[in-house]
Image 1: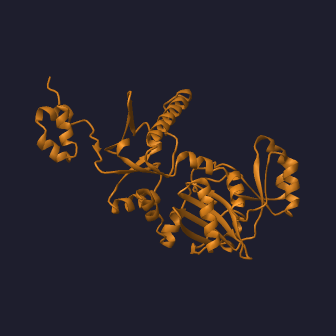
Image 2 (image 1 turned 120 degrees about the vertical axis):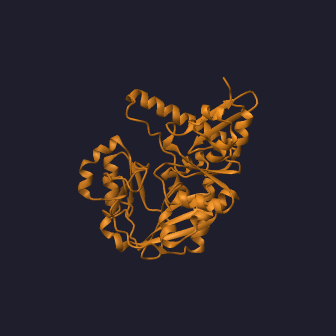
Image 3 (image 1 turned 60 degrees about the vertical axis):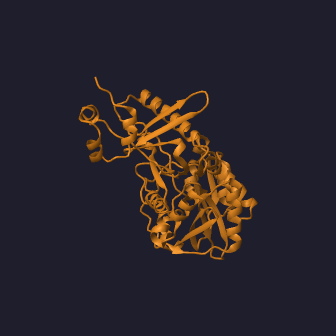
Length: 364
């Protein structure tokens, strides 16, 4: 039986389907016409790590990269392993990884930079029994971890270990205070009595939040304490349940505006919301259904920008999405930083060139 010369496949790898059928002899076409072809990207590649439900921000960065003459490659992590194929080869002297997705393939040697936008768990079919499903997810995540490791020579925005280190909210508060930011009075506890005492210490003006994220999207359905929420005295009557899960309690800061500050490689982009526009939300403008009004431009004082640059430098981060409160007295209060936070609303509503700044940082 005739076989297809690998050299022929290499030669026709970049041809269109119509050109392929003109070049390859019919005897081979009968053998391969039903197979799926993966076109290898020939130029330097910028890998965009995200998920299949992501839109706008990922598209804007990909568009900006293409305009600058480089090739973006989108990898939806939730599609692995069902729709994304990964192959890793190891020998005595080197390793070689290849990802195939969306009719394209890319090797680690082609990847010059990586934007770590989002990493989601694999979405596997419900036909798998729970015990096998969990095992498959663990193995898939471990395989992807190995692929990320194979890209250690590329430029990352940002390095996954740095993102993990910078995501700790308590570490953020400590370093924010060290660089000179004003922070809210804060208590973290699993002790009910301590929460009650703190409530009276801040004169009953207290909010609660979690140290970690329960939802992967700001559009997710809300649940108790999922978002920053005001706490009333009656809420603390059943505070003994804190023994199961420590929580963060902070003094509620008077607001004139809430600021979303996006930091990209030393550049700062700011959007502001007037607090009176969403007063009914009590504490958190991110809750689903909250009418936040219009985003407005805002310029940070030079001293706040310098502190911000120092803060990000402490974590070694190129990107961050930070939240501040501007009080009626004009004081800037640091709340938190999300190393992979949202910014699309600022680019869309205020025409801030954040995607372009990310693209520049990736190819610089």
